[in-house]
Image (tube, rainbow, N blue to C red):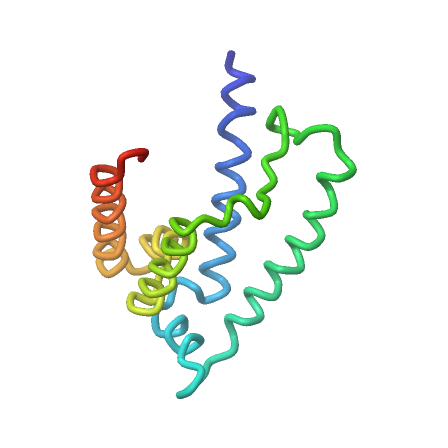
Length: 143
């Protein structure tokens, strides 16, 4: 029983901690840096392009593994998206995500990581994000 709990909770705990540390080290928890990156017609700050580039390289390598494995280490099967996943709801959500990211300078991952660095301003973002999630939960039929 205890072994099964470790197998269930350890991978997300380790990967989430590593993800949060990477976001913090990469400067993605600093809203001013994020806004500077998004301001391509003003005083553009390209440093986050290197963070994103590093993520793309890691993902390009990781994308090669599902084809060589029978099943994931911690799951029964792979869950790989395809073109049928591109729905108007997904595209609208992505647009809202981008607008919110541009306004707040934070998105969910860096927002949670920023709770350690700047708890008050990050908490305002997290509360607003959770309120939006609750609104969607209560207003959508299939949520």
